[in-house]
Length: 244
Image (cartoon, rainbow, N blue to C red; front, top):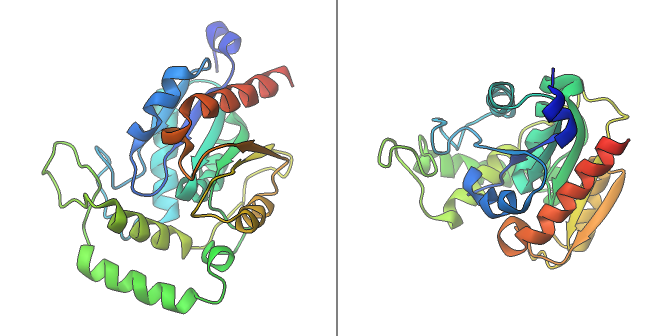
């Protein structure tokens, strides 16, 4: 249960990075947040050893939920960027009523029982699986920025890491089981996103049943290109959640 200090500060913003990144991508955003925050590493990054070509959604959600329970007291707003969005439903289900709002920053996600690949690359499921199999053959066992450096095989090239992570998560079935339909969901639309065209963003926002859409004048990763603006958006959401 949150203490008096936690109640005064409001919910903690739990930040889940996207493909090719680690928790460090959120550093500048966190410097500008008023509300408390916690940036997590998905398995396969830094001190969370795993094969990034084969991490399952359940394994990732279990790891993230354990980190939240260990590091954060009280209610949380879950924020997923890009492929991190695919992990938000599973994380919310595991945290139960501690999750008071969901935020998808250009967040990939699918409807219950579906796969993201069907939204972003319709009709390409089979070829996507073939591509992923080839990447697993070449890069199996790899991590991103393992700690200590050199402790495991690593992929330093973001152009390689991002497709592997994206294809791995996008070809797995998303479950919203255990996530209340009444839980608020915000889609942050990146107006200068070259990866997700506007129409694709609309489909993704519909997949998560977004209760609101907030625009940000930024590319696909506003944590890097517009951290101050993104921090203001996240703080604003936390304030609204707190005020009811």
